[in-house]
Every structure is written in C-alpha cells, then in structure tokens.
Image (cartoon, rainbow, N blue to C red; front, side, top):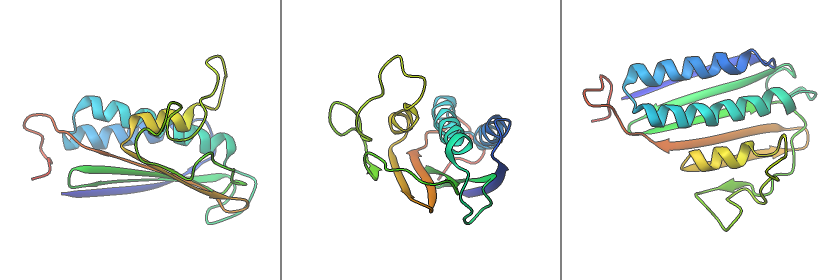
Amino acid sequence: MSIWWSLCLRRDAASVPLARRLFLGTMETAGVDPEVCHDLSVALTEACANAVEHGGGTPGAHGPEEFRVTAYLDGERCRIEVADSGPGFAPRSASAHGPHGPHGPLGRRAPADAESGRGLGLIAHLADHVQVRTGPGRGSVVSFDRLLTWRDGAPLAAV
C-alpha cells in the first residue's frame, strides 16, 4: 500500500495546524498506531513552523511566501518532506541517522530556557532518520521518516 500527498501552503502560521490536521486524518484513516501518528505530527509541526518562520525571502522552486509539505506512506514507512525557498542556513550536521553523541544528531542542544532552536533536535528524537538539505539561496528541505506500526484491524495496513 502506498499513499502520498503534497501541499503548497502559504508561509502563514495558520498553515501549520492545517498541514498537521490533514496529516493526522490521513494517518488515522489508514490505521496507523496513534502514538506514531502523534510523534510524526509533532515533528511535522516543528518542520512547518521552521518553514513559516525562516523560509522566505529568496525566490526559488516555490515563491518566497510558500512552502511545500509532502508525505509518503510506502509499505511500513512514512517519509515527510518540508521544503521552503528561504535563505538557507548552516546546519550543525547535514543529516542525522539516530542518536549521535550526548547532544543528539544535529549538534549542540539549545539551552533549556531558549525560546527557539530546539525544533530539529525534536524532529530527530521523534523520527528514525532525518536529513537536512540547505544552502545559501537554495532554501531548505527537512526530510524525516519513521517505521510505522498499525492498529489492530487497520484498513490500509501494510501486508
């Protein structure tokens, strides 16, 4: 079983809960375990919030006032990509595959009282694999995936 969808959304705070609700509806309808749905929806929320806050200013594949969310359910894995056309940034690490060292896969932890800077670390904690592709003038793409578990009797469970 494979399902995929892609949204082009305005860089507006109202787009974040919209993307999350559409994602949760798809996952719940397919029969994905509620804990996995929750974890991935939190990771999606963080990635979308980053795109809304930091993803504009440089025209690219999408206009500077838009970002794209794509979700793939393929067999027993879900992959999510959030792409923006912002100025890019210098990630602490270009990719993360599980925990690496005491500060997680994407470098130093943000201080506990920081109001920002923890999103990529949270995504890495909630997903199995995370990849960040970014560069000056190229925008950013945050991709993450996770192995799915299913509710008993799930209508679209992988066979």
